[in-house]
Image (tube, rainbow over all chains, first blue to last red; front, top):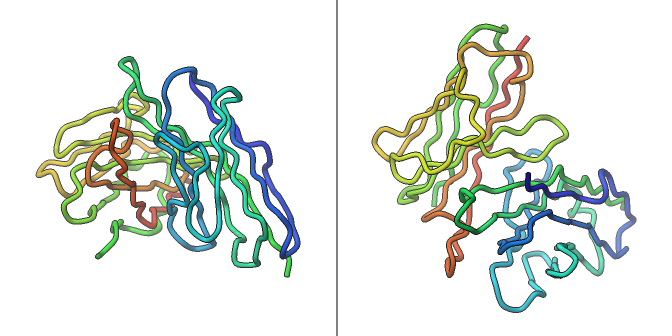
Length: 116
Length: 119
């Protein structure tokens, strides 16, 4: 079965540190890729998405992600984190193809804590 | 615009009881999703509707879970009877059209969720 893995369960950084959160998926076909964020007490919201084209995708709040097809990866990056980036981050994949429903598969999430 | 509404926000029930959750999607959104998010895990899609028809319910435990979207707008998700392992947050999301179609760039919008505790 298809799956999405996220490398870290909990990441702790100081403000201004650089961030990279790993995401890998197990599916050899065409995919759409997403990063969602859930700030404390708030709804899940979309950070960025990749459908096709330039594999380097820019999202909101200075986040970006790079799709590397050969590595089945879609890692999230931010050059300098702020305390307000403290949240749970979810990678998600939607699998495109005749034999699959249009269902999202979410990773288990990575909790980011940014220390002031 | 108003977001996805869900009620109740919290529910505590005993095992073997039944429970229902309600979702009102963003106006005009044809696609509606129900997810189950168990503590420490990512959301798992239970069922996806396109208007009032089911597109995907492959991960819905149909012996105890049911969902409907009779008029293609609001939706209800029911659990009967509940088990301890059903304790989770149930999320509803909607999108204008199904996310993931080739050439589309639609986005899912999530509601606040209903936190269910089964004791």
